[in-house]
Length: 354
Ligand SMILES: Nc1ncnc2c1ncn2[C@@H]1O[C@H](COP(=O)(O)OP(=O)(O)OP(=O)(O)O)[C@@H](O)[C@H]1O
Ligand SMILES: CC(C)(CO)[C@@H](O)C(=O)[O-]
Ligand code: BAL
Image (cartoon, rainbow, N blue to C red):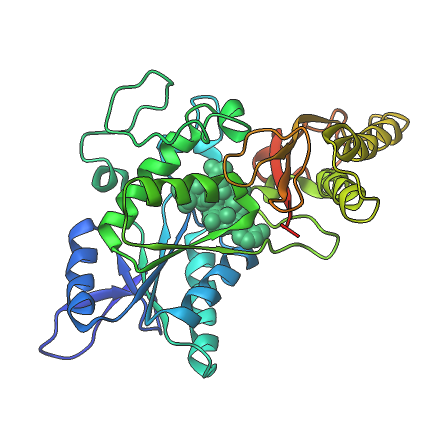
């Protein structure tokens, strides 16, 4: 990190080196940066992230640059959305790589005449600034100023991670209040998160538009995710199981004309079972173990489970699998970031209204 002085009379601002991207670390500095753009009616698009940036984040930043005069990327690993037993302490933090990626992307955006704006600032606050009342509670019964969006935040991811959407909604409410963006950009990869955020914006009359970008995938279909670094090569090869299972359910709906829950989800369960059987036939030094947390067919607005899909409304196929640590590591095997702990992966496919 470095600071640079833009002229002898202007104040010194921290910037990503060799770029015009401001690094804003406090709520006050964002407010000072934002005020003139509000008066000038220059639009701001906010891309909230937890860092460890990858091409999924890049696609959201590109969309924000197309549609706004200024793009603000927030990088903040929000403690309130991690359960007490989750991976807050090992969550990948890659500031140098993230700022290098933003610098290179900003140069590309500048050269592409189709964009309204570029990356103007990175907001990288401390927890003391985001949570002025103190480190946020992570327990289910913690006291504090929280935003809860129910019942949509209680099912699926919310059932497995009971404080997750409380933490997400709370930090997003804060980020939206601080940055005051005209538009906010979220990835479809975290589909229930998009439904929770849209509900929050609607129910609290927040003056921002929620834009959802498509899921960016690796060549074999695995959804890009910051947590993929935990996998290591052996588990990475099997991690497509969820995408393949959801794809089979999508095919049952789109190609075979299935509408009932058991038939649509049955196709997904078969892929999971075949994959498990194939893995368990391998030696412990080669196989991969995983557990399905849930596979769901839900209403796109409420995330409540559907018995039958109404093609006029469509549905959301989603799931979560836990890739278990490898049983018998081979000598020198790449086990992934932090020694290859259990990794919970999520994915989804939208059955669009017809
Ligand atoms: N593969 C992807 N395609 C499109 N958007 C994505 C993708 N992965 C993440 N995003 C979006 O980027 C934003 C920031 O997500 P985040 O920083 O948590 O990354 P992540 O890869 O989802 O991390 P994690 O592994 O913790 O879930 C969210 O709106 C998320 O939906
Ligand atoms: C939206 C978000 C940045 C809030 O911390 C996080 O949940 C994420 O990265 O998806
Ligand atoms: N992209 C979701 C962030 C989380 O799992 O905590």
